[in-house]
Amino acid sequence: MNIIKYILQGTLMLSLYSCSNKLAYGPDPYAGGKEPVDVVFTELAPRPSQAKPGGEVVFNVRGLLKYKDQIKFYINNIQAQVTNISDSSLTGIVPENCSTGGVKIVVDGQIFAGPTLPIIGKLAIDPTFQSGIGANSSIYSILKTSSNQVFIGGSFTDYNGNAASSKIAGIARITTNGEFVRGMQFGNGVTGVITSMSETANKDILIAGSISQYDTIKLVRNITTISSTGALPVKSTPILNLTSDPAKSNLIAPVFNGGTVSPIAKAFYQNNKVTIVGRFSHYSNNYYTRSTYDNILIDIFPMGGLARLETDGSLDDGYFVNKTTLPHKGFEGVNGVVNDAVLQDDGKLILVGAFSRFNNTQSANNIVRLKADGNFDADFQLGSGANGFINDIQYSKLTKKYIVTGGFTMFNGKPANGMALLNEDGSIDTGFQSLGFAAGSPNYAVQLTNGLILVTGSFGKYNDVIREGLMLIDTKGNLAKDYNNTGRLVGNIYDSLEGTNSLGQQTITLVGMIQSFNGKNNLGNIVRLTLLD
Image (cartoon, rainbow, N blue to C red; front, side, top):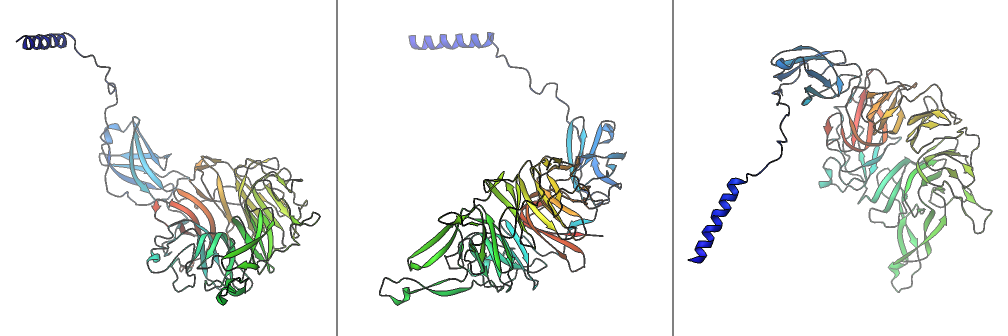
């Protein structure tokens, strides 16, 4: 009984305490907030469904009339003029310099997203290109041969779903219209990544990158040649046989015997010579004379990120080799990273990247030119060079200019925000002026046969105009009128190829790591654009 009594007393005391001490809550976090606005875009398409700058478009949206004095309207983040509002629509005018993008309405600080409005202009995705879902990983190089064959190289293992029936690894042939070509002799393709391709004098394809094997042959040193059918040229090579098995007296090896111990960024074929640049510190080849079937020896030779090879892969020791030292070795090269290079028709080589010196003796602020014999070219009038890294360099035969892009703001003491045009002697083209990038920088630029310059990168604005990742400018640096209508490019462009489509329109095919462009996903790292006159 006493236990029950104490329990009843405790319960009564708790009840009394609870009644006399109400819980205290903090202030209502939602008090004073704005009342929700009942604005809704309907699923009906705008009228017209696409428009030019200056054109009037009707958007289907409900609930605006009572907020007509509080509305701000934007097309691709550019405020647009509103000409009419009703209970079911808003009519606006497409602003000048507007490109494809989403529309939105802001009412008293609340944002309501609407549809994407395509802007009509002279640049568009080519609907005749038949790449489908494209490649499932990056494409670093695209090559059109003298016989109009198109090859792509990269890190991909599928192209438009064809891996189900054809082995695809790092290399594929496509038609000029983007379709996968079957029946090639690539075998198992490459083990690794192709970053560079070029055609040789005998119509073979020189491939380079980070490659340890081609098809079933494991004796590739980051570079080799393949035939135009995709087959690896091989030969039976005598080796040292320490066994009684006669089958181990020879080895099937690539005809091209040479390469590097680290990846190659760029490889050029010119005048029956192969020039390679990259982050490697040694040239290497397979030393078969003392090798056995199970132990392939490698002969290495110090080279500072640059070498010239013979067509069979052997080292040309007359190029970029310091013969004043014993033993002989390659020169030191740049004291940093080479990102890109251009080989001139006269054999001179321009290197760009992130470095400050060449061969420890010459000042070279992120750009340097070498003579045809591999020595420093003091005649290249770079002055103080770039004050930041250079990511890409392209040469235009049309204007005989070099286009450099990267993370610099000055070139030879002159303003050059992320981009500059250089004359053939290295001096800056003062007729061109970058008007400034925001929210990122350019990383690839190429001049087209119509004279315009296509620029891609991570930027969000150019000259304070919204241009997200891709733009076309003229040779003075101004945005090309009517060519900047496309929407955002997300990704990196590594290479391009000009041509024409079946309608006779000028095209440029872009390859790289492309996540989306102009509101389209699943492009498969390749997209072809049309340029209309």
